[in-house]
Length: 85
Image 1 (spheres, helix red, strand yellow):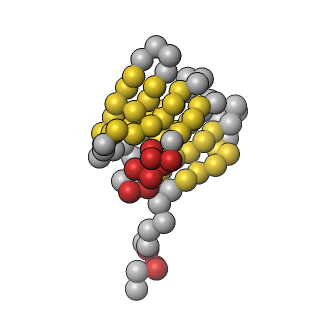
Image 2: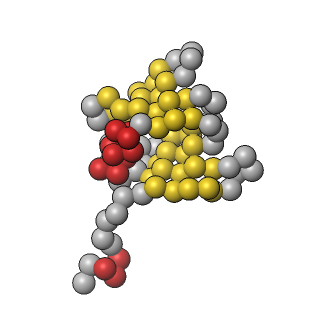
């Protein structure tokens, strides 16, 4: 599953093995086992705990600018491909 965070002032946190998305109106929870990518489109905040959970669960975090171009990407440091020889 891909989580797309496109609401202003959304906070991305963690509770146990779940990502928690908090806005002024609602709270959403998603199991880290089912999330493969988090795409952040607008101004929001992400906790260190959520970043750590994403890295432990091999979840890619992408921040997009106003026009949809990627500004930053955070992904886990794992060995793969030709580095595993």
